[in-house]
Length: 364
Image (cartoon, rainbow, N blue to C red):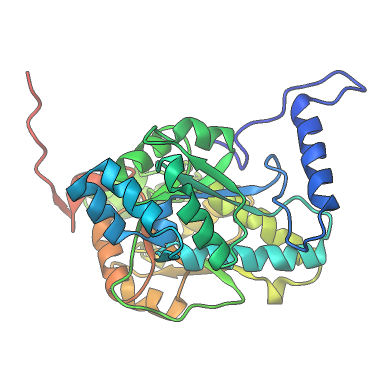
């Protein structure tokens, strides 16, 4: 996995600006000259970039039905016929609003800073559908200026170009492709019931193994049982776990949190992070906390559930998003109103509630 930003600007000779820097300076000058008070997008190389698909940002169940049952051409026509009707909010909508709240606080404390969340709409929709998406974004006054409408093409190369820190989609194949490319990604699920979420604080909850950390310990659980796992974790307590697919996103959140701490705003920080793990604290919790410490990362709250259901605890936290690698935890969370995102990574994908899923026979 890669660091917070997945690429560095190419080196330039002294006294010369790269073409990208010149382009950014020109764009900044353009936005600064406008009379509107609407904030401009931050510089991509320093921003924390969140890419969301149109089906996660908006509720497009009916539109998806048209596409599946009547085909692409009818789908495009349907969107054009309804382009003056705003789409309803989707699963990622509260998360995006919370990102905007954090940006507002950061701009107040650091008026000239480019270290902000940058939200990119990354959709495989065709450009003809773009007007309805733009109208919907403007209707809700969302600060999303960067669009990427791929017309059915894979978004992976564009995600890399945008230096994406997190990609949220309802398309499992695209999310899997992103994770394999080293990009933090998850499949969004709509909760079964509505929950009132904080409007002043972004709350993000993470599972541990196969999400923040690799699945190395989970492999031992699945293949050798809990007793072997507990012994292994005690023996390796001081050996940091390898990083998992969302470690870089937690790192990016921590980077922004520290900007608030530097202004003596720790107790009033608009970002709060949670570790919600099925691990037992006494038997296997120390290695997790020491791993985070070795990475130089903080977690605001750590909940070790020792196998208990996660849904009831998440119902109290009310996160804007909860990441887990196992679908039965996702299902339990969304049944109680939590916006959950599945991270399809690691050995857990081969199991359902601890039982091995029968794998299709390989063709000879």
